[in-house]
Image 1 (spheres, rainbow, N blue to C red):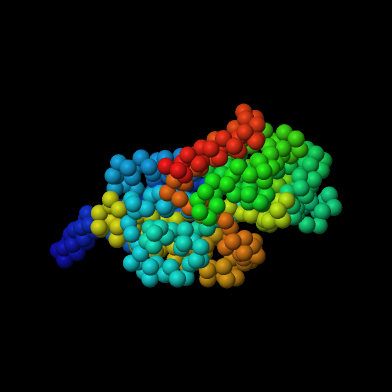
Image 2 (cartoon, rainbow, N blue to C red):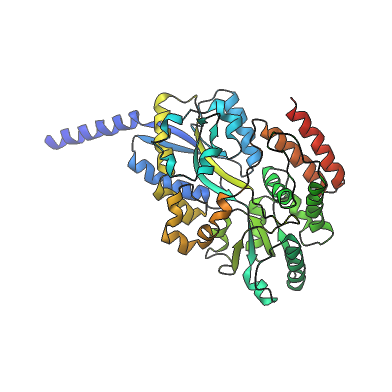
Length: 413
């Protein structure tokens, strides 16, 4: 009889626990291993917090498509998704739809994060998201092939890259250089790195459009020339996103690749034909003598339409995912850079992914795309005209001038 009572009480408690559990939803991309790693982390989180259930809403890899889905969800006043994985360029635009986390500064230990990442989630003095991982554009190269053809260092300038890519690519019968040329946000990231390294910019500090500049024209012409003049980049690059470039490089069919840190874990996985043959370095300098890397990264924000209970559960989830241990786990297994300063001092990280520590200056000095609530409109225009030039639908000089006119119209609204 006593045993029956114990079983009955246990069942009642289990049912009560199930009924009292809060379910929240979270968006996530699936670039590289990020979704796989997230599921592993959530398994640990839900074991720690059995009263919180987290359901993942997988999103498109394209940041542009993901942005448009968020516009739909948030504008409709939906309470799902509860937690949104947002690009570093979106806080200003979406701030009105997110929970204000300013009073939770100490709860999330934001004083222990990289200052630039905290600045990226601060809008008009309000913290609207928590930095999850940071990014910067990098150059991956086949160190075995550079050595084979007599090069003792990776390219320091874009001209050196062209020369090496031509020589090695032709001799090996592979592509010289692959990057992101499809019409989406990734193209803007790549384009900005050329623009900055050629000594130009899109907006100045006062928000004035300054892209109509001879150096910007030269930067875009260089991108076009890599495809059609130097022929180190395949014509198909105009359809490539991150994973397209990564698969080509990882299969051994390219000498150089521009990509984010996440690719390291994949190109050096046991299944990779080029494991142990890859080096990583800062992107080359342009004629200005400057090297430039676009600041990337993703943050975690909370939908303000969520219930108070869901918001509290979401805070616990974000605190867990951005903790020291989980940032280290994510870095080691997904190859995504921590936003906590202390993680970079971890000896295991330095051993397994040495470039994260050696190239620390690249990550903290990466340049942000224009920080404005109108960014998505600016991005659409940049994508349109850069892609038109890359696909030879429009001459380079005309593409830059038309881009400048449209950007000025947006900025003057």
